[in-house]
Image 1 (cartoon, helix red, strand yellow):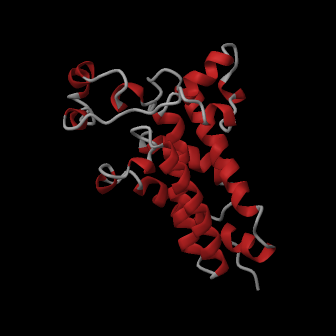
Image 2 (cartoon, helix red, strand yellow):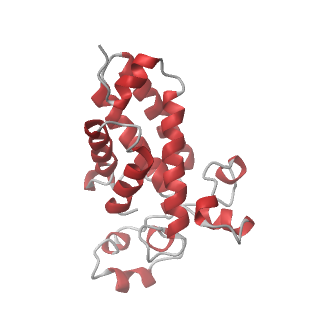
Length: 207
């Protein structure tokens, strides 16, 4: 998903739960996951190349690092790791066919009705994410080359499967699913926190 939509989803999902400084740290860490150095050898950051097991393990690891950081009063580290977590869960819906599988069973549903955490869909053998066919795939990230490169790539490529902007089919569903999942991950974090750590995570100073 493109940076502006990662930002928009994160703001809509979390702006009422965090102070301004905390939210900006979360957003920066979210967007940082798309740095060039993370585009190679880090498929689990984005659920690319069918890296579902690794991606889910990464999410669980990040949850634990947030809890551990808050226990040590390291709020910024907690926000950074939570920002990374939100990027990965948001990419699940933009980089896989979860949305199309869900819509097959809910053809008349509106985007706001999507359920982003259906176990039998998340574990479905038909669930797949886009493969990265380098080096040709890399050229598809260059806007003026994309129209010429994409037709040359297989249909299971990242370039064909990603839902990263409004022009893509099912974008509204992917956006809604990513937003709901971001909120869900926030509640999964705070449900295990005592009041002091909740306030620390929210960016509220307690005396």
